[in-house]
Every structure is written in structure tokens, then in C-alpha cells.
Image 1 (tube, rainbow, N blue to C red):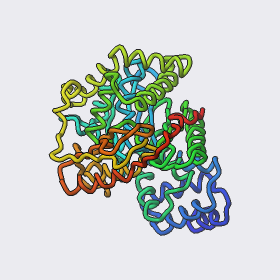
Image 2: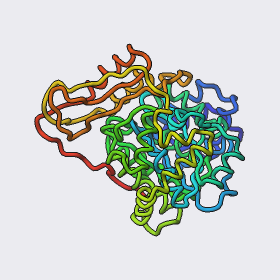
Image 3: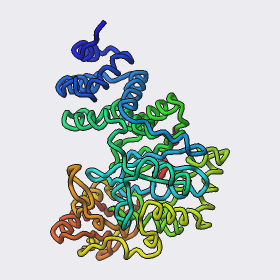
Image 4: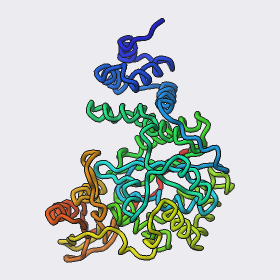
Length: 436
């Protein structure tokens, strides 16, 4: 029997599960253009209200994965491990855990995205390194992983093209916020990227897509189930994103903080999370019997300097100036800065990650639209975080950028992110849960 979109939309609207063939028919037809936007939008809305079963979500992910190229990493020896974060403010862990895991013998062949809105993209951050190339040929990419153990590049247009098309449609039809659609969007790209194992960092809190633990856990479990069903060892860590991670938010600022962390001089939270994620990556890659043993190996790579050496090799391998590791003045420099100061005495009770992300975007570090240019030197450097004591006149943060009006606007936004109270707050755990 010949399939048609009307029947598929009707079936889903009535709350019935779609078959693998029906989902594949939809994804293939929409990707190649034979199914129009209005029918795809109708199906997305039906999925939004009627939800999908775990089996349907797997079929959708698989069809999206197979809509474009699948990267073949089989020529690289060892267990290739990918790390994916669902996105947060100040989240520069890829630039730290990549060198940490690679220094412990885990091949890292990673594709990353650009930032949009208030969360930064790894590709933008790496492009703040003078000369660094985020676009390599497939052969250059593979050769660098074989030679150095790590390469991180921008995502090619042919990885899960169905996701790119569907996401743009979801964005304008209020259907982004559905667990199956989010899961298939993330996992189709991860599975197409060719690694053997995946460690997921699912952010939870005010500065994250998933604001509460329950929805973060639901997403983590869905993604872990899809990854394992596809034959990839998959583990998810649910981590706190109620305040920014580390102290730097903005492209070059975050690369500098990543290098400082690899020197053993990074903020406590980013160091802790990076060691934990790297520990799980080393475990998934078979170089440790337990995640704890993996973490110990990552700590040795950090304190012994082999991870920093790996970062230098990684930068040089992709055409970047490796001297940035010693000399931060080689990064793009901002022309203006404005310090945000406390108007009262007490403790930082909360620090709104989303607001700091917006401040960084206002300063020029983020995009509102995909084609926007960004200021690689712009951003926010936090002086105080949750639990820190302040007095009137204490610096809370400094905003950097090249447009004085934008810097001023960003500084006003940053001030509103801080809430000061008389009582010292209890700090919640950085890692809330691990899903295996």
C-alpha cells in the first residue's frame, strides 16, 4: 500500500504509534523536499501533543541519522569516545576534557556546533585562537586524530541534514520542547558522528534547556536508551546549571579559562566537572576499569602536565598559534570594559546563569541569528559566585567588548543576575545524578 502524509498525520493525531516505515517515509520525504512544510508542521504538532513511544523515538533518531553522511572512524585505532553537553552558560568542558582524555590514550574525533542565543558554541570559542582551523577535510581530521589523538571541527552540512531542516521548522512552530524531538535531534547527530561510546552532560537549572531535575532525568534516560540500543556505550551525567560554569563567559575568555584549568589553576567547579567527565570517557574508552580509576588517570594527566601538552599539540595541529598557551595577549583584545559592583553587603545567594548568558550576548559574544557576526573578545568575567561574601563596592563581574553601548547594556543585565542575601546559602551538588 502506497503511503501518504495525510494518513500519517491523522494516525499520530489520533494518538497511535507510527511504524518504522512511516517515520522513514516522512524523514526521507521532508529532507528531499517532496513533503511540504505545512504537512511536516502538522505532524510535529501531533507528535508534540500525543508524544512518541520509546520505540518510535528510536525509529525517528535512526531515520534522521541515516538522512545524510555517517562518519567512518574505523581507521582510527582504539575506542573513540564522544562527549556532548546539552548546552549551558560558561560550559567550556570540551576544551578541557578533550585534551585530558586524549592524554590518557582515548581517541577524540569530535564535531561541535556554533553558539546561538545565550549559550556559546565550541567552534566559536576555538576560532578565537589565532589561525585555528575549525574546517578540515575528512582525511585531515582522521590524520590528526591518528597523529595527535584529538581533533575538534565544525559540523559538516551533510551530518543528519533532516535535523537541520526539522529544527528550523520546530523553532518557528513552537514544537521545540518535546522529549522525543529533542532526543532524536541530539542523538541522530551523535550517532552519525561515528564514535564508539558517548558521554552526555545533561544540564539542569535556570541556565539550561531542562530547568528541573525530573525533565533532565527523563531526557538523560531517553538519550542513554537510544545510544545503547544503537550499540554505543552511553552514559549521562546530570549536572547543575543554576549558575554559570567557571568564571568566564564568552569566546576567548572561555578558552583562556580552559588553558588555566589545564595548568591546574582553574575554578573549582569547572575543574571538578571536567575531571569527572574525563573519568567517564576514559572508562568508556576501556582505559580504566571504573569511572573512579578513569578520574584518577585524568587527575594525573592534569597535575603531570600531559593534558596541557596535548592542548598545545591540538592547537598547533589545526593551524592555531600554540603560544597562546603561555601568552594570553595573543587572543583578540577588547577595547572597553565595565566592572559591575555590589550595592549591598551579604552573600551571593543566587547567580542567574541565563541572565549572565544574555549579558555576554549583549556585549557581542553571542548571536541572535545564525548569520550574525560575533565579537570573539567580548564576554563576562565573574569575580564572585554563589556563597561568596560581598560588601558595598565589591566587584561582582567585569564585562568586556568593543562597543561601549553594548558593554554598558550588558553590565546592567549582569548586575540583575546577582541576588545578595544576609544568610550564606547552601550550595547544591554539581553532579546531581549519573544515568547508565
